[in-house]
Length: 508
Ligand code: KIV
Ligand code: ZN
Image (cartoon, rainbow, N blue to C red):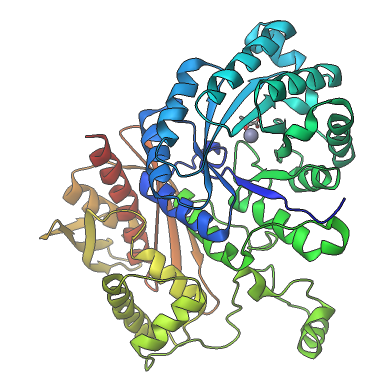
């Protein structure tokens, strides 16, 4: 195939959010959408508006702010779904409706209880209905990879005739192999007479670890849109990972001979942002954005890389915005300007007030920590809580514990300018701390999960704590970082509470 463009369709905010426990707040979604736009994503699937009031508002919010990317909303083949999608994306400059309907025998018989004729009729009517409101319509035959070919060709021809401009081929259950998926795309190109009027898209799930391989096989066979998510998050085992697909295409241009609009230097930053919002920690060995993805441990490899990076590196870490912390980046004598420039080189630009706050925290950190790495700076900026509005802020924390004394914590929180202090004991310092916060906030979060990891190497590394809590049946993720792990634990817990408060305010 000639070198043409592959459209990148991101579904982090829709299929990505369907990952169990990955709920994101409206502010986080907007922040991620703006970053996706900066990354150069062509289409942002912002949500499924009919699924909840919150999702509807969140899609609308994204539609209002995004200027260059196309904003897409998902709908079943049901008029009220399509109406909600149309309404939610109304403010967008470029918009698309994505309608889907299952087409495999197993879904028709057991889930939908409809005949093939009824399914075609419903799909056509829905596309025609949506098409009355906009020109850009995508249709997905759900479970396409397990759909009989003859029926797949028939429904695709019908929806294209009805006005669909993109036909997406979901491997909904992550069942297919790369060879088979490639053959499905080729089969569609050869057997759907009007296929040149639509773009063929891939949408692969990772149940057998083949989502990226299947998507790339789709591209090789003529698909020109890829649906994917940041860090590969999504329903069950996830979706195809955007960073792996884009870097695959870019690194092996000689093989794929296609290009994308993506500014790959933004990947590391967006990956961290999604990880923070969802609470899903990126595994160290994850391709492209894992913390070990560009680190060489063996002496032979290190020697080779020092002599010539290409001996063991097929991509440059800087291509994806990774800085390797090989040297110190800043120290306690560094000034605000150097700090600002360093953040800028990491793709982080803060408004003046937030920069001042971050700079004070950096000085604090540099006093405590011998070596300050880029990862520390990113954690510190993220920790400022600019993603979630700050109802409660940690003012002070004193913690005492030991082998033979009962752990005790004295904590001061600021709530809308009012400072309150509480002393508490507990089974451990973290437990004592959480009890004090519960008493001050008068909320009773249930701690579902707690994880801590070091941001960088060394005994003085920042501790990065992730908590999952439930408050009033809502599951929230909170993160916090500090050289003091009790403080990091408190910040993570407060971060989750702040998200709850923000969501509650939004619903008022
Ligand atoms: O996996 C799937 O089939 C989907 C559709 C809604 C496109 O996510
Ligand atoms: Zn999916």
